[in-house]
Amino acid sequence: MSNTIDSSVTARFTSRWGFFLSVLGIAVGTGNIWRFPRIAAQNGGDDGAGAFLVAWLVFLFAWSIPLIMIEYVWGRRNRVGVISTFIKEGGDRFAWMGAFVAFVATAITFFYSVVVGWCIYYLIQMVISPLPQSTEAAMATWNDYQSGGWPLLFHAIAMGLGGLAIYKGVTSIEKVNKILVPTLLVIVLIATVRALTLPGAWEGVAYLFTPDWSQLASPKIWIEALTQNAWDTGAGWGLFLTYAAYMNHKHNVVKSAVATAVSNNIVSLMAALMVFSTVFAILQTEMGMSRVEVLDIMRNSGPASTGLTFIWMPQLFARMFLGSPLAIMFFLGLTFAGFSSLIAQLELPTRVFIDAGLSRPKAIGMVIGFSYLLGIPSAINLNILSNQDFVWGVALMVSGAFVAFIVIRNGVEKMHSESLSGQEGDWNVSRTWIIVVKYFIPVAAVTLLAWFLSQSVTDRWFDPLDSGSLMTLLVQWALMIGLFLSINKWIVKRMEGSTKS
Image 1: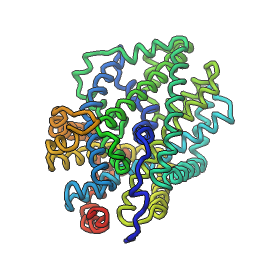
Image 2: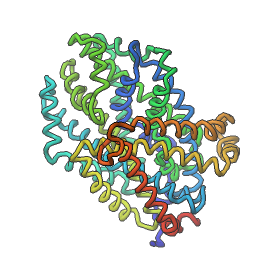
Image 3: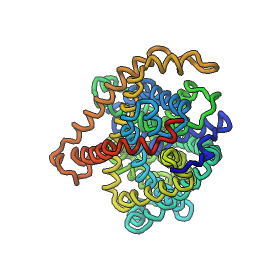
Image 4: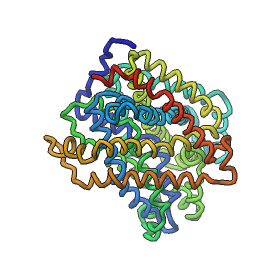
């Protein structure tokens, strides 16, 4: 183990603005722009998707913000990565929990980089090629990309650029996000305003915000809303904890958590306005499709929303005035959104390796190398990508439950009184937070997990090679949890330098 202290360990964000943009970059990703509109459409009723939005907002305050507060407190207090934090907060015997949380976020990185590669490729296509005028032309672009070696190349480009962005630690992370995130927000704002001016766009807006209150009686709506909000914000992943290790004490925990989560959800709503307005304006108003047909396209858009984002959106832009520059802006924004999240996902395991004694260059080399290799299956096979999205996406709920478990074990009231009340310059958190963390989050996590598992009980639930089966999820979870449990003592020993300080 190296005895040299990496300068990036003691570095801090230089300003509140730089810190805020960086943590907002964690939350705002491709899931806001391509996932949220599709999930809203899938959970809309005949009259509208407003009921889903209500449930989604409830979980913003009852799941995401409380967990983000915990991550901020832990990161600022311990100044180490995810695994070392679990050891310091929970004790040596819970090192395996921290390892599992860190691995889940890293496993998502393996295929997330592939999706960022798609965004880069389509951005280039929007610049150098005419927009597709038909579904066949759009499908040809997508199939040509997937059938060649392009996914491997652009996966490598995404990983390489991500590695460069974190090479100098928090210094380079802050500088990159000061460019990426404001540019992304301006692009989303311009594209949303343009979409709202299309003839028939307000049909889409009306559908998005019209509630069918009877839907709130369905557990599925609430569970889907919780899932999406966890994905939206990144709460419970360990990403905020990693960045919070570089917080200054003047960066307030409560204000930062609320501002991050609320700003993220505003971006999601803007993305939904952009997509719903565009799709309804073109498909319903211009092409004469019925609402049922329009919603069918939005709901059944293929793995990782490839249909809506990469096949339909270019066609929709092709039918707009100034469609080509708007398409470039859309995919530039999508690419920037992907990168702002990817660099946080790469920093998480990098910080873990630094805690284990590696220098930053060596840690980044290992993270980039292994992440690229383990992302190759997802790059060359969409079914594998879909499987990894399913397996580790559901595991995020377990990660959130593990975070809550450690806080409950240490005393929720203790964290509330010591870190979330009476802090100079920060907002005070009411005791409702205690109830949410101590009771609601564990119950919600168990309920959500049970629902996902029940949905996976299909005719082929027992087949571990079936991409969406219950067994493939259980086998992969069991392998990783079993591995981390078996090497728990070794993990503690490796992290000794960062946990004894």
